Length: 292
Image (cartoon, rainbow, N blue to C red; front, side):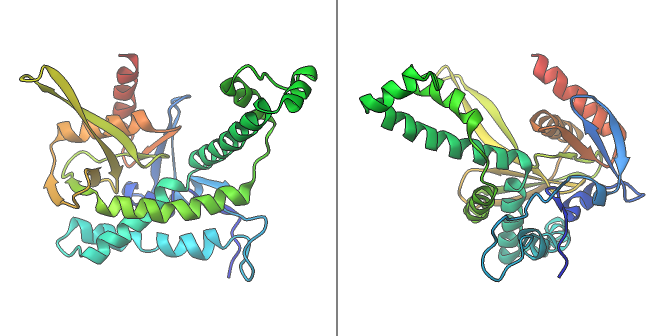
């Protein structure tokens, strides 16, 4: 079994759904606005991202990347093909939900979030312990270790001195992803199919969105929140609710442009796709949204 060094947080099986006719993918940096073209093998990866320092007994340090994630990644092309066709079963839905559960949580940005939240929980416990102990509080105050005027001030300062426990982050990722899989499977699935303009994606495959509806009889606006997940250049999944409804429809160019604008707006750093023109248009539309 190979022990890969470069680990894809955007799996090749996912990126391959957004390539052009030359099997290459465009990627645009939202900050520099540089747009380039490459092959999926060279994009969306980070060295030793999933490598454990102390793996479980009998497992390699890179077992998360291969075989664990590699086996999940290999299911994707056939699942997307079935989803666009007519032969999509309950089991296929469960398997696709599993793929998406890990896809959502496997990014460097999400790992940083796990690390930050873990540190905040620990530091808040420390603050509560110190603030109730006069002797400990005097030590902190006399040595001017940290600002103890409030929990928020203490956490803000002290968090910069905490190290990262990579194995804890990876194990948290492994424990949370199946739970997200269950949530995804229970949502309402609205499968949006494009027959014209391609959908784009990003380094943050799940985009949060909401629609506002004004209720004239109550003189108020309610908001319905949902997630947009581009699955390929021709398919985007809209997740909402929790009734496990399933629908599929062909969408208009206007709907596709709205989806792509949202994807670009929510991206961490990169947007990706099969068309240079569509990427630029989506990015410019999201900049207008930010300026509002």
